[in-house]
Image (tube, rainbow, N blue to C red; front, side):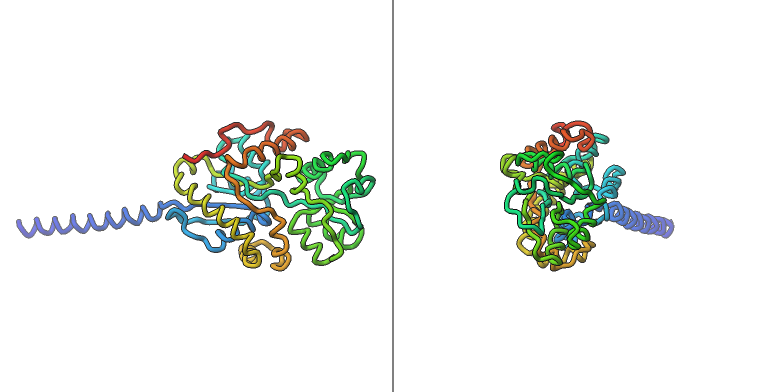
Length: 325
């Protein structure tokens, strides 16, 4: 009887150990893995230190994905696959209008559009009557550029002649060949052109011009958003991530060659030398939602005046802007 009791007790102990081990394994499998996505280019460069070094944030593993196009980022957000993402600011507004499932954490890219020329032009007024090559008629960069022309007293429809190419990648061939004398381009394409055509000059710094007319703040081209449910469940992670993100943005500006190297290793297909020159003109700086809100609303209003569809129909309400608990 005693032997039988001991045998049964031993079996319970074994099962207890097995279940305990099984429970621990299950907990490990169910541990949270944070997914952060961004398009290639300036957004990926701005966060390159975190993507490459992959520091543990708030004791949670973080997985990063650099995607070829903003539309892919959008699908990751709307499907719930992404917890955090860097997106064009107006796209954040569009997604919010559809699902209300995201919050704006802050803005990180403050404009990278420039007007370049191979002709000796010293003032914006000298552009009157000129032909300017640009990319994407009536899309966001086009509207942003035209707003600055208007603010400087030029009517884009009457005073300027625009020739459009399909995409930003089509600007370098027409400009370097000499077909285009004046063009609108975004960094890092500007630095790429200047490397191959050294006589190229930046004749209009659109982010700097925006600051003149919009209260000292440039336009928040790209922003960081978080899934609302994730933010609710993991507020400590969000706080820690924002601290890391802010430090990463500072580091990128202070360590341009290494940031360019990191960027290449995470999938940004721009030569290191070119990207090193471009980074200072990408205007990377992280401002949390509360500080960025005025600039975000001003930018979205300009886009909405051109067409409300660019922001999802109307300005986002208060709930769009993340507030740390």
